[in-house]
Image (cartoon, rainbow, N blue to C red; front, side, top):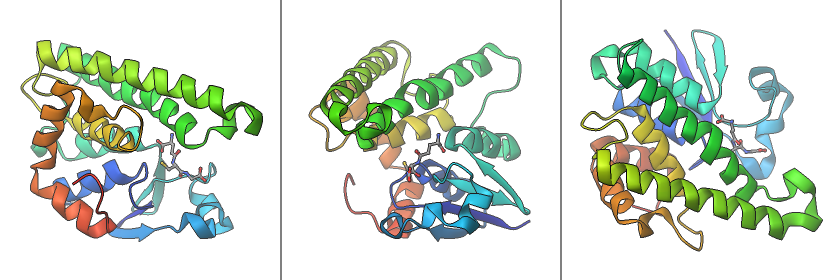
Length: 211
Ligand SMILES: N[C@@H](CCC(=O)N[C@@H](CS)C(=O)NCC(=O)O)C(=O)O
């Protein structure tokens, strides 16, 4: 079954790429060049009409939305136990943290990185200030959660939510208060970075920051 990931270095496909490596899924990597607007090319828009990355094409079927893709990868590779069993309390918590990442934190990062989108160039400062407040509140919440319920978001068992959250932490590295300023988050990410797949991911995307 052929698998192709379209992403850009360090972008939202980072978590998908990381899980493909972690799960040992053979795949082809297509790194798009944002400077050349390759994510807006007619060929790519046929796969992902929003013109964003990632897109994962499995056996000819394109799938978009990073969080949805990683949940699907966990379910289709059950031996790795990266998602709890259906209809359990743990599964409910898993949905909660995945959606917290995708629905609460990730849009705040989109606003931080693309601040003219919500309300034009004139409101960039207000949009960034609001994004920063929301991101820091999210980190505060997870830091307290890990202190009480860690070491991972679901407790003892690692899940795709931890990989997703690590990506969001990484995106804060140049912000006024990066995620690693919170002690539990710093300890958490040190564990995630120690995974051999993390190093491979960095090599394949050609990344050097936040190692
Ligand atoms: N909700 C989407 C958001 C994806 C997204 O915003 N990707 C950014 C990179 S992190 C992108 O492709 N930006 C290029 C653009 O908007 O033109 C997902 O999670 O897949």
